[in-house]
Length: 342
Image 1 (cartoon, helix red, strand yellow):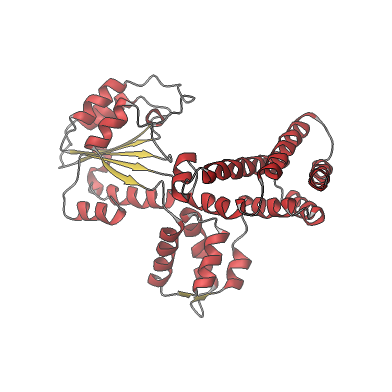
Image 2: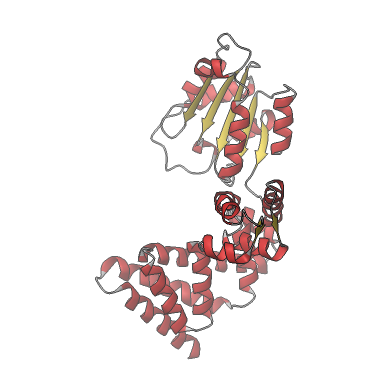
């Protein structure tokens, strides 16, 4: 089910008792929440709308509310957010959830209530009984695998509907600048529309001036420089990131994560996995999987492994010594280049 189909359900008053929104596209989730919020008239919202966070509240409270009949209205709306118990994550177990009552409600929902379960995760644990039951009874709205093409189309249509123009090459540069993330793109667009309001044409200069490179993008650039054995430019970029107040451990963590991803993607690609299947299996954004697939063709496993192990060692030193992070990174790059030569 997609956003437009949900809007049609609401418009035609053909609402389902349970909807489950899966994925981390905050922009689309917020848009849907606004649409569902319209179900309840303003004068009834205090009595017939409630939102429950599963990281701090027991699901039984949400179930009790959902099972109640609306007060002086036709519908009750209940948001259930962050249902981590639907995933394989067992770390957030501070709340002892009454999953039996939730399972009973999901099996026999109340027609006068619309329960919207908002799961900001890339996937659910399909082995769990409650997940299996939800797949039978709930309408799934899956934002977990929105690919670059879908993001590009959405952004392009939004810009056109706003009365602006953007060339395809410029649009692609913008999508790359926001790492294929729709929520990031939609947060940046208002600045671009304001900046280009005279000609109503979004230019590459506007994008370069207003849309900063993300840490992930800078990390990709840094990886390419390291793997090309371009020590000087790699150290210069690292220094610039420090000057932009990026934390050394954060930079190193992003580098370790990206090298780990490249190694995993290389292994899965060698086994015949497609880009889409890799993104699903690793639980990463499709755009990250795409970039990784493009990059592994340029590298070999030993070089990736050497860089990964070197960065793990660098992280240990960052945590245990008082030496300059820039100096430690410089030593890492020089050692990596020396190992590749030898």
